[in-house]
Structures are given as structure tokens and as C-alpha cells.
Image 1: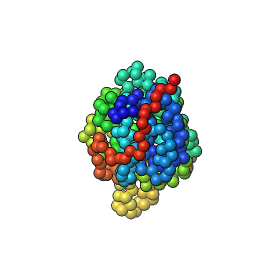
Image 2: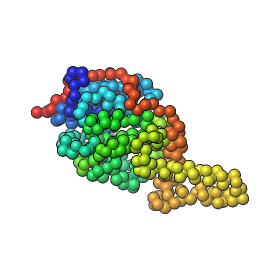
Image 3: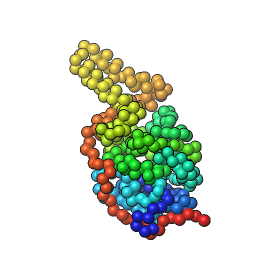
Image 4: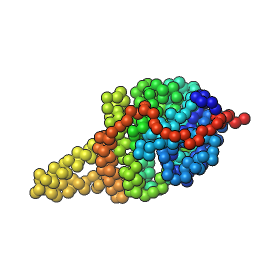
Amino acid sequence: MTMNTRVKVSIVIKAFNEEAKIGSTIVSAIHAISFVGGEVILADSYSTDRTVSIASKYPIKITQLTNPDERCCGIGGQLGYQAAFGEFIWIVDGDMVLSAEFLAAALRTLENEPQLAGVGGRVIEKNLDSLEFRARLLRAPVNLQPGEVDRLDGGGVYRRSAIISIGYFTNRNLHSYEEYELAARLRTAGWKLKRMNIESVTHFGHQIEAYSLLKKRWTSGYVLGIGELLRSAIWKPHLKLILIEVKELRLYSIVIIWWIFLIYGFFEFSNYKLVVINLAVAPFAVMSLRKKSIPMGIYSVFSWNFYAIGLLRGLFKKQYPPNKIIKSQTILSATSNITVER
């Protein structure tokens, strides 16, 4: 493949320390791309394990973040995009196995429906045991159902021309919510997104205890995402959409107001501390009843407080221009694109 040669599809694999799964992800990506023609790109966020050495055994392109301090969810997609030549971009994670049948169906749909910016499919989750996953499953997200959706969580195939029209792919500043932020900008610009009733990826997600996962999300900065999302949209056309659709913003704002009432009540109404205690305990009791589980009720309220703190931290965190070139190094560059299988 010569420099700047356009190909049909670029599969961008975002990865950080995925040595256990990256081999199977790459093999499935190479298989999927062989039917339509294109390239596979590993966008590595400066892994400290064997992710890159394992990936180097395959005929793919590897681009790696130069500064590990910039590591976040949003930077991976943009890093891969700035190295991609595909007419269509399929963004996935390094712990997924891809479906070739989905890619073929997605391309047909995008070619037949020019108003679509992106297409997703069914995400098959293999981690069904964690408390957090069960909490999310109970919410039954509409965006995971077939039909027109407001975002493509779990990855999707995007039209390059749609991305060009909005300036950049994923926001390099976001530690989470990067897929929703991309969708909000696309939809504000008049594009649509669709999820098809066909399996797209199998996801082998986190296999750690729920509270340990919260701790990991604190140390990785994931918790900052919602505040960063809000800050990134200030004075932008898609701000209104975010304020209307991201229900967590209202929830965490209520949590912050709850804190204010508790602190104010504790110091100003010293004779009514029982009332303050009841106010503090009430959310845990209500959620335990709603979830029909005391552990899930406690976890829900604890996680609200956790993310409310993250909202405040992210809101005041410095951000870089999202379309600024990300400093990176090319570790491996495939010499030719993966051609259509005969």
C-alpha cells in the first residue's frame, strides 16, 4: 500500500495492556477485512505489557501514543483515525472478537442509506457476573436495541466523509463518553446512527469485583469522563443535546445538591441530627428496595457519589484542541493492504 492510498475499510483496534486478548482480536479483524479489503490498525496507548510485541507478529499497522500521560479512552480512536486510510472506519476494543458477517452487512447498509454516519450491531457480553454489569443490564439501554440509536456503544463502522464533516473522530480529552460525544456531534450535524440485529462483536470485558473496578476507574481517570464531556461541549452546537440526553448529569447534580443539604443540615440544625441521618440513609434504603437487593442498592448510591466527584474533577480539567495531531510513533506499518478473499 503506497502512502495516502485510500482503502475500503480501516479497522482501528484501541488497546492498552490487552496481551491476553489482543491476538484473538487481531486474528478476527484480519479475517473480517479479508472479505472486503482494507487495513487493520492497532492504536496502542503506550502499553506496558506484551500487547505490542504480540501484535507485531501480524501484518497490521501499529501506531503508539508517545506520551503515556495523555492516555484516555478518547485518544485511542483519534490516534487510530489519524493513521487510517479507510473510506469506512470500524472502531473496536482490544478485548473483542469481531464478526466478518457484520462488517459485510454494515457496508451494504451504509452504501444503501447515505444519511447514516455509522452502523453498529449486537454486542455479545461475556462478563455477566460483575455487579456493575448486572446493574447496567437492568437499565436495558435503548441504544443497544436494533433501529435508529443515539450512540454506538461497543463500537461501530463509521463513514469517513461524515467524520470529516464534523472535524475529528473521537475527542482526545475524554476518559469516557467518547462514543456518545462522537454521536452527539454527528447527530447535531444532521447524520443518523443505526444498530442492526446482527452480532458485531463478542466482548470479553472486566472480570474484576465491582468496587475494585470503581477504584481502577478512579486511578485511570475514567471517572472524569462525564465532567470532561460537559466541558468539551460548552459553547458548541451539541451542548443542548448533551444536557437533554445524558441523564447521569442530572443524577450526579442531584447528588451534589444532596451533599450540600447534608453539610448545611449538620452544621445549622444541630438539634435535628436524626433528620440529617435519615436524609443520609434514605437513598440507600430506596435503591435497595428498587433493586430488590441491599448490595446492589448500596453499590448504586456509592457509585453515584463516586461519579459525582468525577463530574466536578472532569469539569475543571484542562483540555487540548480535540483536532490537534496526537504525538505518536509508528512501530509497524503493513506494506500492503489486506485484499479481498477470493
